[in-house]
Image (tube, rainbow, N blue to C red; front, side, top):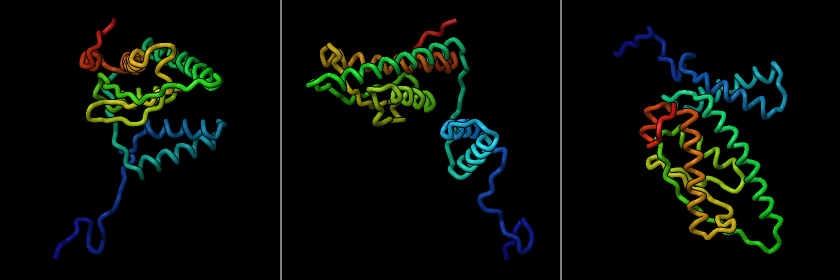
Length: 197
């Protein structure tokens, strides 16, 4: 007869989740997204957002992402301001393409191997690139750190090969801004970037 360490007739708890194992940063972020989706900041929305965040993080096991970097305020300002400029520029370029009668854009799918091997920086770079109109990430290969993006128009008055190189360099520049905003000195060196003081 096998005795349970929980006492006679008792069963071992199944699927027990400790409050200390809840990913609180994820809960807060999900609550912020919840409130943003409802478009109204209220105590009820914040509380429901927190409950939804706790349920999502407890029921859907997400792999925790290790953050070994550090927040660099000046790098973060550069990242956000350049992203805002890219949003406006991308929107205008897509609008011009849509309004040009008879113009057929030369689209392409490109592969860009990133410098960093971090899932966090790969994800952030992919999201920022996808949010800029005119580019969409169609695949990301974690093992090689490669993003595959569809670019709406690679010519913009240049040859196709020049346009492809410009598109690749824009993705790498986006990754560099992410790294300079969030990466540690060791991660910058590992990515082949100079540490600026």
